[in-house]
Image (tube, rainbow, N blue to C red):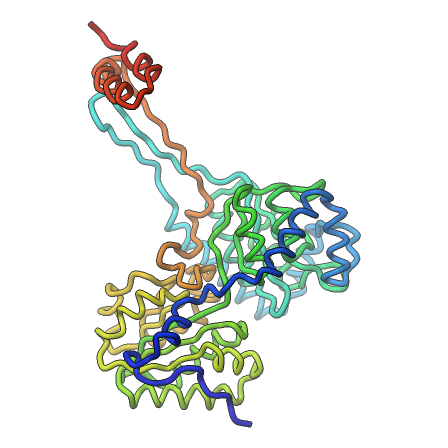
Length: 433
């Protein structure tokens, strides 16, 4: 069976403006029905609490929930029942994630801006964090590790996990095992926008959290955006994406494998290669279509590639970098002869894989870097999840009596100029004659 063609092929500089715009604007028009249904779910949970969550489990998951919370013993049993190779791999991943994120821990700072004036900034771990773990089209125990392990490294007081229940009323064994391995404090059998609402607002059983992290479907993404007035979130996120920059040194089949690895996530995934030279671009495109024809998740891969897949050629690497900056991919793979030399050219990317042997799959699971990343071009402003997401900063200031006197007149002058006369009086009260 032949594979559907890639959506876009040809020279990058000859790409039609409409096609270029579609590749760059991956946010998509918000589905009004999704937004409204999400708003209704949030309101329902906020109003009816646990009762709404149980009703929605019946409606959406076809599950009867005896208890919203999964006992720790069930999570531990899931971990114990894992096949030994899987458990060892998860343990190795958790160890690497902990090492990488421990190195990112921030430090308190103090600076004396003038004699007697000290300004400090102190990182304080969040009190409670919620980690969402998907359980729909695919189940990702690795995402549980990516959320829970950095939070524990940061010293968060309590980490809870929410994941959709199966027909038996319990989340997948893989998610439960990963939660136990990572050290999650509590686990709830809750999915979709309802889980986000429960973590954002709290219910009789589910505690309100300070930040919600983790990937999810369109309803989860919409819910996270709609609760930002009540809780912090990691970043808006959508379907997976990859941009590969390849020169003539890259193996076309290796590049194709990376495109398929992201395409199999979601029919809406966006997978693009920018190759130096038309011959290399053609070789990559042929390899992509050949591998797609025999992919195990062929239906998802084919839809992704035929709707948002592209292999485009450039005359030189220099021509590629402006497109990379505009595209701002979730995953950027630099498959060039001197990838480390190219790395400084990159600014807008969720995470960068340096060299064709640095498969995105390694970052998804095992290197220790976080795979919860900004999509849809939001890497222009957002970073991937890190240990920093699990802190808030306390700023403090000390002013000696002598320094207060020296500040009094200038502060009073500025306060008067803004019409804040009580400010001026408060400042001048410490002036020494």
